[in-house]
Amino acid sequence: MPFVRSLSAPVLAAVLALFALGMSPGLGARPPSPEAPLPIARPAALGLSPERLAYMGQYFGQQAAQDVAAGYVIMVARDGKLAYAQAVGMRDREQQLPMTLDTRFRIASMTKPVTAVAVLMLYEEAQLHLDDPLSRYLPEFADVRVFAGLDDKGKPRTEPARRPITLRHLLTHTAGLGYGKLFDGGSPNAEAWSTLSLSSTETLEQKVKEVAKLPLYTHPGDAWRYSVASDVLGRVVEVISGMPFDQFLQQRIFDPLQMTHTGFFVPAEAQSLVARVYKHDENGKLVPGDFGPIGVPTSAPAFISGGGGLISTAGDYLRFAQMLANGGSLEGRQYLSPVTVALMTSNQVDEDAQERYWGDDSKGLGYGLGVAPQIDFRQSPYADLDGDFTWGGILDTHWMASPRTGLVAVLMTQMNPVGRTEPRRTDGDFRGLLFASVRTLDGAGNGGARR
Image (cartoon, rainbow, N blue to C red; front, side, top):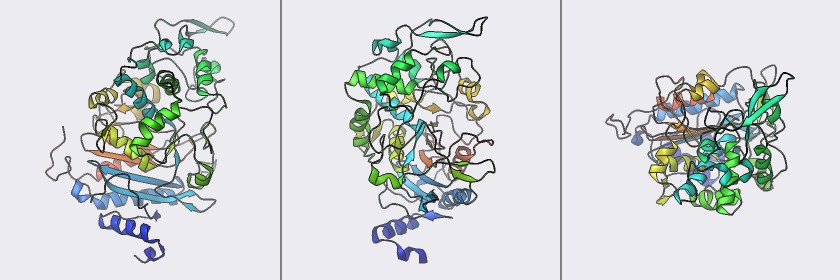
């Protein structure tokens, strides 16, 4: 290991410790941080193959070398123990800054499960009920209207909603809301929603009032449609709790979970730790490609987006995901009841709702309260087991929790999907390599599956 001679003493100690656990840095790897998000254990002791975990790092290192992305951070835990942590490639090629385990990522829609947990905390305190009408907390939604087609002059027609929007509708993306210019192609109603900007300087309150004036795509409860529902839920949390949404998350989730690098902005002195967003140009070359709706401000933005505004690290999000995998607790502190987590991770929509909306890549996938559970792994195009749950981000950030195997894993990169002509492989490759590392289903070496 001649390369370790130039490392500082703390980082050198961490590298040697991870080598002892069977964690090879792999192709293009960077030394891991000496701070681990969870207790460390040897992969073999957890029923995982150290060689196959090392191969996963090598594979993504090759992906970075082949311009699939600039770099990746990978973390894998089993039974609450960190088995593998790896950073490969670069977080900023132009500045020659390597990817590291403390690199910050715009996690986009991985914000949504965090917002759902905030809502469910208030649910457990009897501050709200899931089937409460949204207008009880946000009166501007009292008389919403629904797009009903175009008249003979090509002008949009609307009609009163048949039923009120409920908090459950928001948590399950069945409220009939849309997503501005994102994900709304093909519907005549997209023109009305095209006026909604997700990168404006309006406050959360102002933004939600703007949303309330737009025609719904469908009557509440009738269909699954990806939307700004989590942003509306963030405003609900503000109204019920009496504190700004970002402060609620900080006090109730981030501080107690020790998610010290997670928030809606990154201070100026830490901006160099933020991974740059890349995209592929018309020739397939990897070039910088910022994604307009999602930035990295140096102070709290006016619009605190519960649907996509968080910036985090792989380690911070691993702790959040591990809390959910544990049934709502981590390190002796309870955030949610396991009964509530079971509700959150159970399918709440039509079994083919995601497939109808996204296409074949979502076969076998359901949707619960802020996360997507696997409901029929026989149909899934990826490696999965029934009961696994997840929800990724548009910039190719991913995480998953697998109750049957005890696995919790995070993979981060930053790729702008706009203009991409080939389907992404990141999530599917990640899951396949992850499950290929499993030696025993129960982690103890006897081959029995968890219940």
